[in-house]
Structures are given as structure tokens and as C-alpha cells.
Amino acid sequence: MASVPAPTGLDKTTAKLWRDTQRALREQATWQDTDAPLLEAYVSSVATARRCRRDAEAEPYVTGSKGQMVSHPGVRMAAEAERDAAKLAEALLLTPHARRRHDIRPARRDGPLLEAI
Image 1 (cartoon, rainbow, N blue to C red):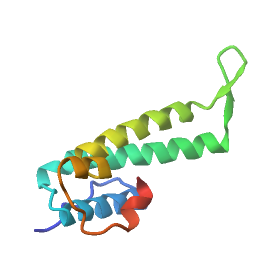
Image 2: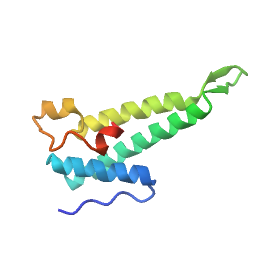
Image 3: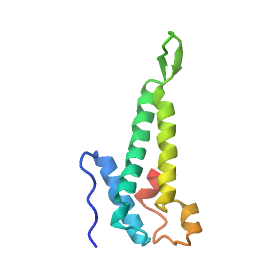
């Protein structure tokens, strides 16, 4: 079965995450082409979290509406995107907990996918 191509507009890192994740799902025999929108939401959430964290690290505090220093809004946005990514990872059966719950034994225990989670 051929891979579903990554959506257009993804940067190189996010497109690689798409390919690596889809490969992992195929290896554990849980991928269906109808999962593509869920996978797109997952990689988008991971990319958003990374981007927001990077922005917040570059400028940890910004001036608030009343002139006070406040945490960069990227901190909150990254946390929300990470929560979304974690929920989507569960739905895609990417986490150890989800795989145990569904009695799925991953084909490999290492690789680039683990670096993203």
C-alpha cells in the first residue's frame, strides 16, 4: 500500500514527522488512509508547539497591555498545542499507554518518531 503524501505547505521538519509517523503506524498495522486528517492535525500541533516554544525562548517576556512584563504568549500557546498533540497521539495509538490499551506491539522501539513525542 502506497503512503499518503504529506499535505502541501509543511516545512521539511514537519513533513519528515508526517512520513516517520505514518511509517510507524503502518509498521504497527494501525494506519488507514482515512487517518490522514488526524495525522495532519497531529503534525500541525507538534509544529505549532515547536514554533511557539522557539519564539518564547527568543523573547521570554513581553510588555503587557498595561506596560507590565508578562510571559510570552507562545508559552501558553505551546502548552495548548502540546496537549492537543498528546491527545491526537493517543487517538492515533502512538503512545505506549494507547498501544498497551489496544494490545499493540510496536515493530521497533527506537527511531526518529520517539524524538518528536
